[in-house]
Length: 343
Image 1 (cartoon, rainbow, N blue to C red):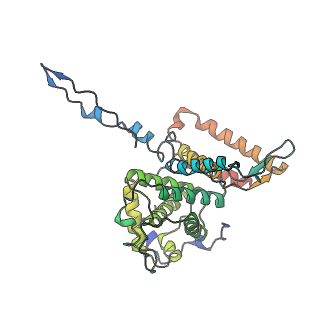
Image 2: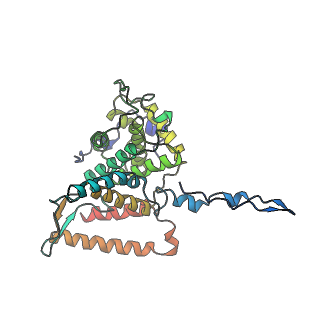
């Protein structure tokens, strides 16, 4: 996990920093039954096991743990999406961009983003838009001291007086995340896992992401996601070189609190990962953040066919009963590496 002293406290940079720079531009609790008063036995008391929420139902209510639960960020964005659609109807304009390319009999337009290898720039934009909606449509401003930017500033600059009330714009959030991803050479998959950890933190810790804590929460999620997902993880000391004024001790303390609040649950099933990927695409569609399209060439069609065969063979093996319960992000990673070989 990179939480050891040798990893986090090393004075040297990780070799990853020298690589080529990446291009970037609660489930409802069932009500108890009516109290049954009997003259013979007295008041009926429900057994504690009947009152507790089963683990399976608890997981189904958490989108970061269960594939059938709707993602928090997509629900947060729906209020704004409905307002936009109402505005388009009143103005007699289409909610979709008129310049959007459409496939025809002669030309098929595809983007270069797949669930096993998402487009980096588009994914980071969508993830930061999800964070933006979390902040804008938050239910409250409940936070914890470890994430309070005024108590633990990331820079030496004086924190504005309205730091806890002024909502950041999407561009500001994007620039912050883009800088981290570009400098640390992180992948698009890491951005999706970052969002999974962020929503898991908000659910487990029963807190909100707000103007006064969003930077540290996002940084903590990125820090953890990069160590779990990436084969060559970035050390904490490297983030201190990106954010010049933060100390390694502060990074270590924040990472420790983040893990404890997650109850050390860092597993991301492939089904949850895929759900977040496609919900991010839905979010992009609702906000006219189009993924770059290009015509399907004969060479790329052959690659897609080869990749489809690899995936088909791989998931046939996963369909066995002994493998169904062990599906994880590692399986998805194998598909991604196969894709990279073909590319």
